[in-house]
Length: 283
Image (cartoon, rainbow, N blue to C red; front, side, top):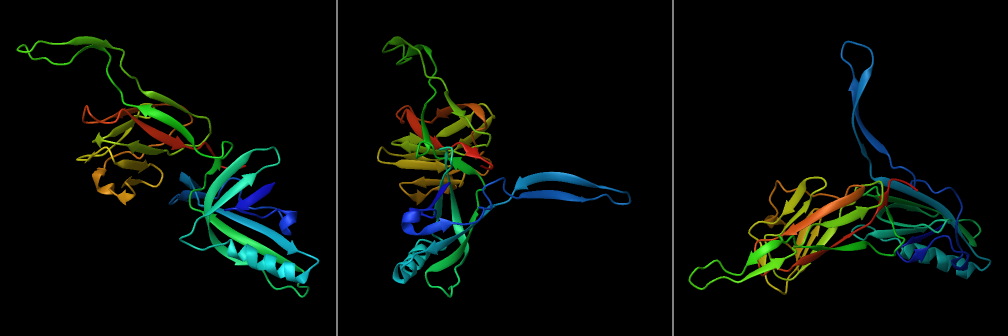
């Protein structure tokens, strides 16, 4: 198994860095359970369960026959371990070729100075607020184009009896089907490039819907909706206030999801892009 923290590889003999012990925290994350005891009788009850943030512990060593190189490698590994607000992107290449990724923060780092300066043992403690481990086989998130839903059938360009009507037949545009091949609900990022008014994105499979109200932007706009982080940005600035309090920050459930995109103006963009990653509770 090979592991990178950002672009720094831990288990790499060429860097004189080795993982010595079992890596803890890449299996199922901790489980938070609502439970209690029955009043006035034996036994208890188990309520809702949720996963805790993912805690990862990595133990290893730095070794070199040259003291100067060993000390330089000590400084190097510490320089690649920033603290909050910096995010550490963890990438894993497993022995079967499968690739994974998740984001974490540095919680603790220990590397005592050994009597022999040619060797140093270290322990890295990370915490991932999002406990899901994401598939990284493609090296990037998966992407789908979500087209605006357009009704088909006989269409009229005008209904004015004074000027007459022009008729044509349109096949229309249906919802977009997205397949989440993993066992975990995956929360997408939706990007709208261009003019849009009061966009609505609905997952017909789950019946959940997200919308922006009173929102109208021109052709230069880039609107980004992050369902996991629950953020809405316009050209990088916060426009969260346009999302009503009762919207659903929906995710892609395992299997096929039918996604619909509609908006409030005929001159709006006709599609948006959606990115997501399949996920796992443990590897």
